[in-house]
Length: 370
Ligand SMILES: *Cc1c(COP(=O)(O)O)cnc(C)c1O
Image (cartoon, rainbow, N blue to C red; front, top):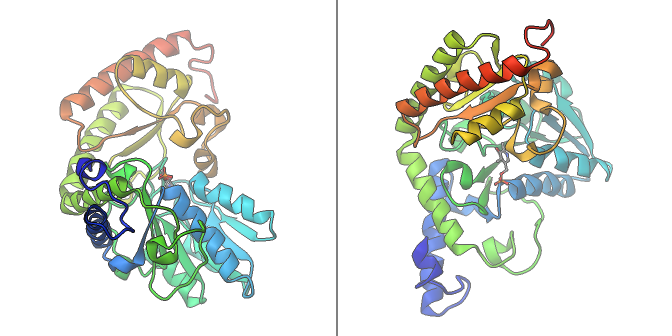
C-alpha cells in the first residue's frame, strides 16, 4: 500500500503518469478480489466498507423493483448493517420478514420457501454468522429464491477467506465483502453484483466505479484489499486447517477444565467459521471476563464488536434461544493466522483463573437458572 501513498499518489481518474499507475493498482486489485470469489472483475464494485455494500443492495433493490413488490426476507441473526437498513426501509413502506433460525443458528430452507410471496423482491441471508460462526446453506437458499424469481444477496463478510466462496457455484446475485476481516485495511469493502442486474447508486456524484459508486477511490486501501484477497485465496486451506486445529484444541481444554460452560452455535465444527468459539460462562458477566482477559493481553469480544459498549444482550444469542442470564456470560474468542498453540494454552490457563476469581465473587455462583 505504501507506494500508493507516496510515488503513485495521483488520482486514478486522471491521465497523468502517477494517475495511470494508481489506476493500474485498482485494475489489479479488482482482478484479485474477483478471483477470490470466482467472479469477473467488472462484477466487483469497491465501497468504503462491508456496511456500505449491505446498505447499497437493500436500498438499491427496494428502489429498482418498487413496481414489482416491496417485500424483503432476511433473518433475525444478520449483522446490524442489514438489520438496521431493513428497519430504515420499513419507514418507507418496505415490508420485511425476519426468519427465525434453529438452536444453532441455521436458517431452515422450508421457512424461506414458506415466507416468499408474490411481492417478494429480495432475500438477504448472511453466509457465515459473525457471533456464533454458523455457515448457512447459501446454495440451497439461493436456489429456493431463484425458483420463485427472487433476487438473492448474501453478506459474506465473515465468509471470504474463511470458507470457499464461489459465486458461480453458489449462484447468488449479490455478495458483500470487507477488507479488514481478511487481514486487509479498514475503510474498504466491495459489492459483487452479477452482470446484467441493475440497481441505482447509493452514493451519487462522479463517474468512478463504472458510474455506479461515486467518489475518488481509496487507492491505497483498495490495493491493500486486493493483496489481502490474493493471500486469502492462496492461503485458504492452510488458514482453515490452522484455525480449526487451534479452535478444536481450545474448546477441548475449555470443555474439560472449566465447569458450567455452554457452547453457542454449531456443535459440528465443520459447519462453523474455522476460528470461531462462542461460549456462555455461567454465573458471571462476559464483560468482566473480557476486561480481565484484556489486562492479561488477551482480546476477546462479548456479543458482537459492533454492539459492544451498548447494553442489552446479543440479538443472535437471543434468536438461538440462549436465556438472558446465560447470554450475559457469553464471550467470543477467535483464533487466526497469528495464533499459536502456546497462545491457546495461555488463553485457557488465564481464562480458568479469571473465571475462578469472578465466580468466587459472584452472588449467583451455583444458583439455578444461571
Ligand atoms: C464486520 C461485518 C460487517 C460490516 O463490515 P464493515 O466493513 O466493518 O462495515 C457486515 N457484516 C458482517 C457479517 C460483518 O461481520
